[in-house]
Length: 112
Image (cartoon, rainbow, N blue to C red; front, side):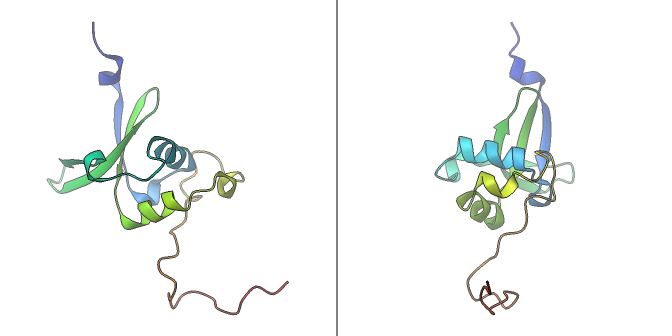
């Protein structure tokens, strides 16, 4: 008897290609964030070492590359942020603001 999970498509997902659906799956699977034992290390087609965490849907195994951006985005996850986007829209997941004293930040404060 073959294991259905062996027939899954494997998709490597870079942060730029992360969709709300995959992000939600990650947060569900790793509610407190992932740690070293969750990280899978493998070589891609270019023989580069990739570190990723795995989430699975019915037909696909997503290997999401780990990064600081991913970690911060998972920590700050709020599904309401994505309700206006399609679940497969990679534009929805924006780069997180890294650090408080980021010079790019607009510090004029919120004007009502």
